[in-house]
Image (tube, rainbow, N blue to C red; front, side, top):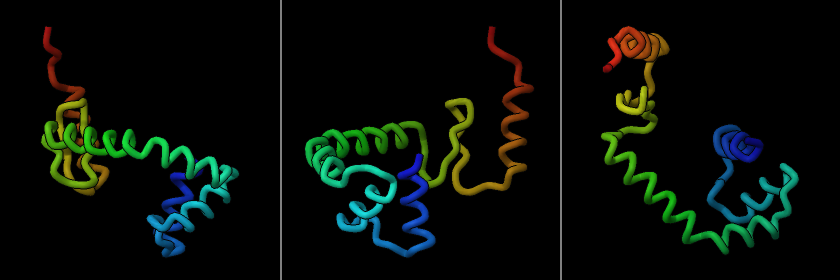
Length: 102
């Protein structure tokens, strides 16, 4: 979670180019990760990471997800785009109230 927060802060607050290897190296160092080990793991696993991204993208398409963000409610109902809290509450209440299949 530290890296996730660090990436968000670097991109949105510090206006850093998080796709730059030097920036990434500085970011991982700032959370206590050895930058050489980070580069090594990324380089060794590059193909696996790329496959995981493509697989997740294809899964999203198969589930009818067409926007970012999309919240998938009850693993079947995609709610696309940023929504008001009330929208999510309404959908969740509808699912809770729906009769369960026997």
